[in-house]
Image 1 (cartoon, one colour):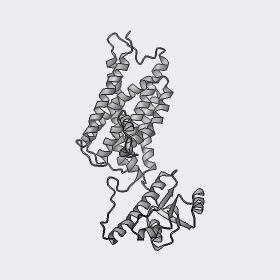
Image 2 (image 1 turned 45 degrees about the vertical axis):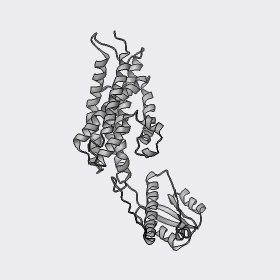
Image 3 (image 1 turned 135 degrees about the horizontal axis):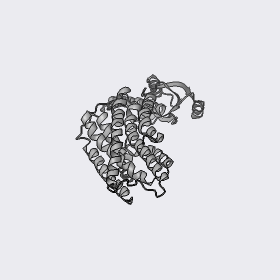
Image 4 (image 1 turned 90 degrees about the vertical axis):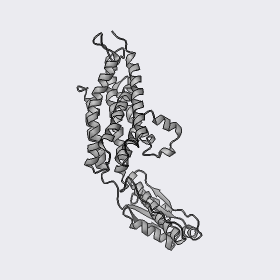
Length: 355
């Protein structure tokens, strides 16, 4: 392992450098004064109030009022604006009738933070105006309170998932490269060769997994404790609760990687497979896409990967103030995965004939 530069890069360099780079890029959490244009077909006091409140917000700046959408699209094409606020002609009339009115928001999705700033501002302004209307009609007003992510920052939202996914993916990459190298050098494609008559596949599996575990016990502590504090991200997990989550998570990732990468014939193949799976794993984990909107079939697929339970458990501990009892189902699921993939690894390594 220490003689292979590729393995060292994935086991040491990537877990240490990539989180720092990612956190540094998103350390500002939010963007301010994103330029937008307004198309006001209503020309009423209410529509002007909506546009003025959008402009007064810290995240959005109205750079122009244009007569139609074609003119607004030219602003976006030249990147003088990253969003369009369209107020229809019946906006004020529908509100006066007590009916639901709509405001259309068009955003440039190539800049995720700009899209988020425009969309969230539009939701906040329309919600505030809606609350005023409810109070005037003697209804119950509502107040929007952001919990667990007070700044509503992108870094605080996505970094916990990225950190846990880095542990799983770099383990799979490193172990896959080791396995691929062994297969390239062994014409019989054996995962191990007995050196003594007393050698057994069980000692090989345990020996390999202990080496990986010792390395990633240190790397996981760095990723989950040091990196969030370096960039002042939320971290309120209790130390022993974190240990109770990380131990089964690391073991599950190790045996999962040893099982999955056993089919790798060449060391380059694992890079294509693991990197390709990173974005889908992020989506099906239930963080970047609401778990309630994920079909039961894809949720079942997500249960095959330790990252799903690791991400959900880590977010609850580090940002939501959950205790170990609150994430007990996730811990149990990780131990079940560790046991299952340990057995599959033993079966795969046990098929290697002894000398």
